[in-house]
Image (cartoon, rainbow, N blue to C red; front, top):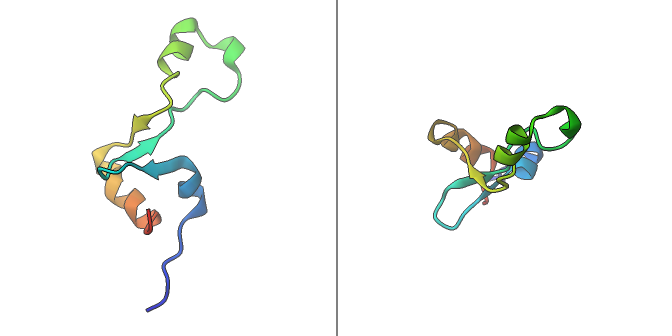
Length: 66
């Protein structure tokens, strides 16, 4: 049985917790921050958000060894 390949794009965006949840970072925090309101920047500050349950199975297929 050949080894499964890890999707490198998904590997950079997601990580798995010990309990099996899929951890991700919030979007809209990289650039163009001068144009965003204080509220947008504050709510996007959370670095450890969790992926939606509906996407979880697809992400786990992309990351077979995590």
